[in-house]
Length: 264
Image 1 (cartoon, rainbow, N blue to C red):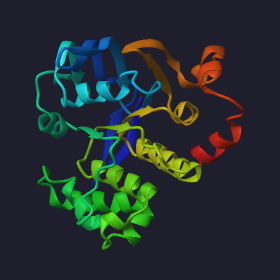
Image 2: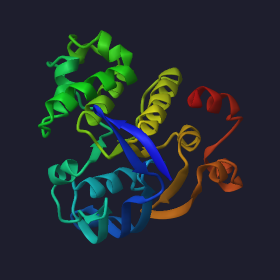
Image 3: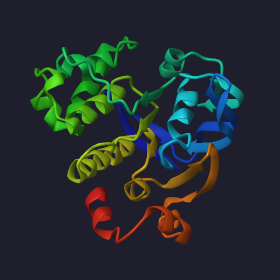
Image 4: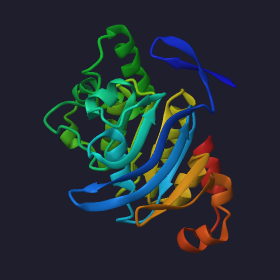
């Protein structure tokens, strides 16, 4: 199946369903402390996949292993048909594998627009970069309004929009988001997730790590649940959200109203 999407100033055909990211038997951790124990995962092109779990289960560690911020102890990471296991983070980013960290790190003494442009520092396609900046402003109109404002004066939700936008300025094939809902008000979370859905529809593949299980499963097509560094459960998001074990552990109440707001 081919999806017609806009990339910068160009329109491209993207094959939806082909595997963009594949993780095979990954073990990783910090020093001699092993956190991940044999992780297998696949993310298809054009999709939204979520990785779920509580604090300390290995979610952020897996993203760091994928992006090259920590080395693998065992296993392999393949992105867009290329083994990236031994590549440095900036080399993986040039291939289109971009991570937005949980820390929501913006440079407070720089303006919003300066922060966004910084995300494109590896790019040389100036016209496409300008077009992508306008595209980010279309996703997040508040950033256009605040483009000359110092990022240190933004609210928490606006900073989250800024760091996602800066990730988009790197022209990613895949965007990895580490807990984008963390410490944000429910209304802001809904706005952020609705925009992530719009970004995916523009042709960017999404891997989102979350503790907000309800929102993540409404957003995604497929989900993985991690516990103690091991994938304990996986499946289509619509099946996981109705699974009794997932409901008992993570969910409560109705999801219908949230689904309608998110998908619009």
